[in-house]
Image (cartoon, rainbow, N blue to C red):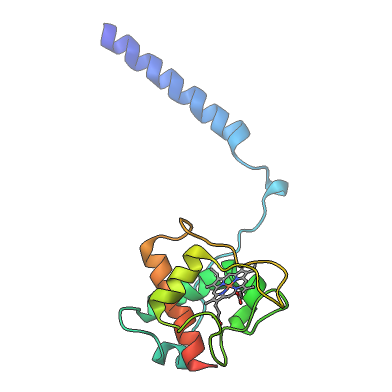
Length: 148
Ligand code: HEC
């Protein structure tokens, strides 16, 4: 008998949970905002060709998506540069030799402020897991090497 009663109780609890979820959890129709589908967009074939070993095309697409989200505000979409950060897709590196490992280190540690930029590049240690960091650094490496 005891187990039956507790069974009934959990059914009751489940109903309460469903009711709450049904009434309050669900957004009302007019409050609903279409969520953009985040898809990894196509990659320039020149970038694919220039990827360092160990970075697949799929990883580079992830790298590109991360770049757009976390780096493009200062470095421009496609790494073409802005007033806040240098172009990464062209010319010579100024602060690094340019290996993927070094790019990954700069991403993690950031860079101190340097003219003509007003604000330093913030370090992002802990923001990316190892695979994401490798994908992002690989993408930036190839962006620079391909110079699209
Ligand atoms: C708040 C602006 C800002 C953001 C965001 C930012 N950077 Fe930077 N980045 C800079 C600035 C400014 C420099 C130049 C610093 C210097 O010359 O000392 C720089 C330099 C670099 C360099 C070295 C360039 C060279 O020629 O040696 C690399 C590589 C780089 N950034 C990659 C990235 C990546 C990848 C991201 C995204 C995770 C990123 N940055 C996000 C501002 C930013």
